[in-house]
Image (cartoon, rainbow over the protein chains, first blue to last red):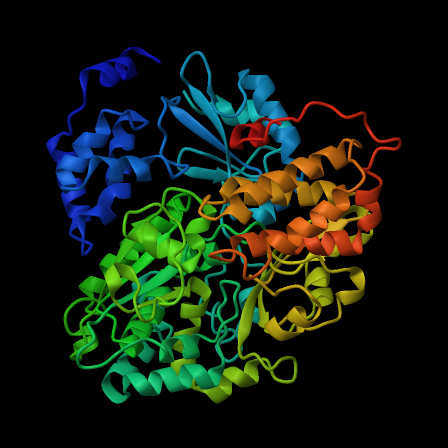
Length: 167
Length: 457
């Protein structure tokens, strides 16, 4: 955990005006405020990279729903991170088509290069490595996502060059 | 070669794609760029909405959709028109919701991504027609969180459509009001299950709901709700524009199902890809379009439509890929995207990979799925290591039965059972080879594997 994330965990968390507006805007799309809960978690995650425990009551209060309801949702979805992650999250597709195209070799190359396995973050907080469901890029597997972009096919030899672009 | 950004791509050149034969893709640009509103309208876009909203009744739309026999392209193959006809409507029934299931996560499936990223207005037009037919007051596009590019494209397209009067009050100058919001998910394959999707839309954990009541009676927030796959909805505009008979004729003698299908091939082929072809096209033709097997290796097996469909063999390549035929072969058409396995691949290992996927993605709601899938994975891993024990295959048979249809709330576990059961049938000797002889000495029981132990293995 770096300095900032440690601070959030201990000092509580506040939403800025823009985040509050974004959550309220999302809420207007639905019959009931609970529906905006996933979007609210994503809004928090956009700024902090993850969703600290302290964010849960803040979201619950903003939406006017129960803390346990928000927590239940926050622990269900795989793209809501409940631990600090690196500045860039690498999602490695491990489903059948990528399996047939040897994603294991790609994962090993990533692990060798970064020195981390699934669920781990590099010491410099640059990358976190996670598996993901079929990315829908099966015609160009093995595929992976880094932040908002999907890449494929990614050969083990491509890993060094590909990661170079992320600071 | 260095890694490239992924862009969705259709393998057919524009010369092959015609308005008369390719309702889903004839408008797509050769360069794969997104089709904006202006170009979409120039190419007959929103003509179906204009026509239907001014001249036809909702019931008429439902009847046409039924006659066209558009079967659900998300994998279940249920008639979309039939589904629409079951939506509760009436003077005392509140208007409900039309939800587009754009939560594409089925292993081996990459078709909806193409439609979402390159032709967003076709989906919006299909949703307007669907909403009109079902008296829906509002629509949602439930998009998986990882489809970031599609989210960008759809947001822009929704704005364009709203500005041009295709969404909002008085759609296309009619008395019909309808708008759409984009709802992006946060992972979990189970969100693609119709009722789990509704829970997720409501901001709850994505556990499935018991049926009945069906969503058409009581769905999102207790209102009548229609959930249709992206490709299904994208068929509606052409069906309304050119009629049920025309749509039926697209598949001609090939199949009783109407229309075309966005078929695809991935796995061990020379050129994986996507093609729009008449429904009922054979696996052999798809394989040929994909340039045949990669490196000249022989075909061992194939999945006709994603990870939750049963394995088929080379001898099944000449059957039409439609819902009934593939069902009769003991598999399912599913999403219609083939996964191709060659002779070098252990089917046991592939099944282990598939079951790991299903075990990880189980929502944990019901016991056969939550406990049976990790158990299945554990047995498969032991067989893979050559450490299986006598009785393991019979236990896998039993698990496949216990995970099957009718034992669970939703289709997740039955979907997981299908590749397992078919692999045990067609490739049993591979599993048998994993049983250690002589049997291992009894040892202390190992703990059940957890989600962590799958991903770290």
